[in-house]
Image 1 (tube, rainbow, N blue to C red):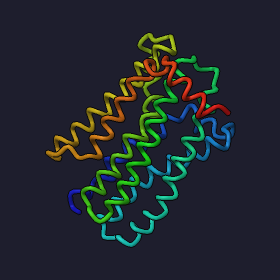
Image 2 (image 1 turned 90 degrees about the vertical axis):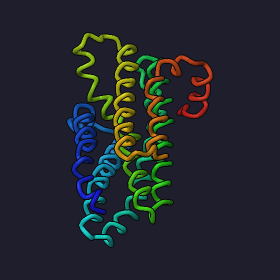
Image 3 (image 1 turned 135 degrees about the horizontal axis):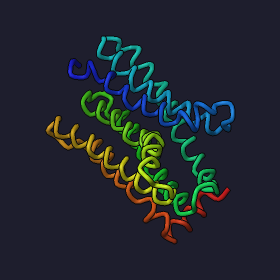
Image 4 (image 1 turned 180 degrees about the vertical axis):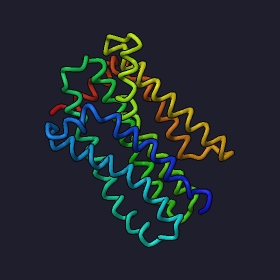
Length: 230
């Protein structure tokens, strides 16, 4: 357990990214947000809080509290997944965003949300294997933080001269994917092992580099329309 005693401090980073990234579009407009956005925004934020609290508890000997919170976390993860899928049709119908970007972002969501769910399921299945359990839980960060990091990097991207949303989306999302992969590579090098949780998250991060390519494909547009037409 001693190797994980400071993990909660590192997990403060994605928590801060999630809060700051959604500060302009959600937290500063909290009263204007629709109920579906509240369910997703609050459940996702609480998930990051859970990620910080859980390793702190278990490495301080509070195993019973850790297990109780773990049961609650399953409900929380379900809310993150259900609300994330529920938002896709509304995002796809958002005509304030160019068409290619809408379809591209819907594709990214369809990779990130199930990827997050799979990581949580694997964490539950490996609950008695501390190292595997920890890595599957930590890997949920790389499925859940990209939307916030994407928004956080939008400002600097516009400052760099990007004035077209169709150009900004692939650049910023691609940068987010690169950041994910680099951090995951560092974790695998540190562990001297390519853990399946980190490998899966790395493959999922590649989707962040494909929004424009996939968003312009007829097969995906037809599938997205069939799945998400409201």
